[in-house]
Amino acid sequence: MTSTTTDQSPSLLRWLARRWPTLAAIPLVAVSLYGLDDVRGLAFLLVLCPLAYLVPASFNRPGITWPAVLIGAVAVGPLRIFDLNPAYALLVASVVFVVLGTVRRAPGFGVQVIAAVLFAAVAVIAIEAGSRVLGGVLVAIGLLAHAAWDAYHHRVNRVVPRSYAEWCFVVDVILGVAAIVLIF
Image (cartoon, rainbow, N blue to C red):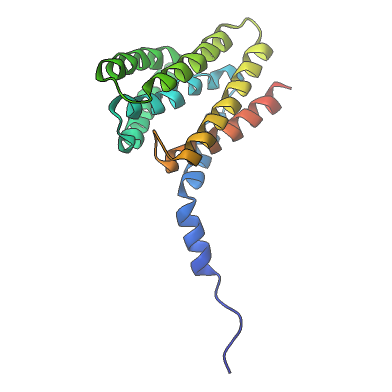
C-alpha cells in the first residue's frame, strides 16, 4: 500500500528558491532600522532605489541592475559610518547616469529620469524639512510610492530584472510602513 501523504520539503525549497529576493530584502530592512533615531535617515533610499532603475535604463541592459545595487550599497556604507547623508552623493551619481542615458538615447529612459527626479525631490525635501514628523511622513510616502513603481516594473518585466523589482518592493513596503509606525 502506498502512502497518500507527500513530503512537502521539496515544494518548500522551490518556493524559497523563487522568493530569494524577498528573503534577501529582510536583512537589509533590519540593518536599515537598527539604531534609526530619525526616519529621515531612510531618505537616501529614495535616491538609491531609483538610481538602480536609471543605471540599467541608461544602457538599456537590465542585467547590470544587481551589480549597480551592490556598488551603490558599498558606496553608501562609508558615508553612513561618518554620519554623512548618502543621498547627496547618490544624487551626483544620478546626474551622471541621466547624462549618459541622454547621450545614448536609451529607449524609455525619459520616464526613468522623471521618476528619479521626483523621488529625489521628495528625498531632499524630507531631509531638509525642519520637522522630523513632516520629513518622516514624506519618506514614508516616498517609499510606498516607490513600492508601487517596483510592482509595476515587476509586472511588466522591463528596465530591471523581476528579482530586483521584488526585492526593492519588499524593502520599500516594510520600511515605508515601519517609518509610519516610528513617526507616530
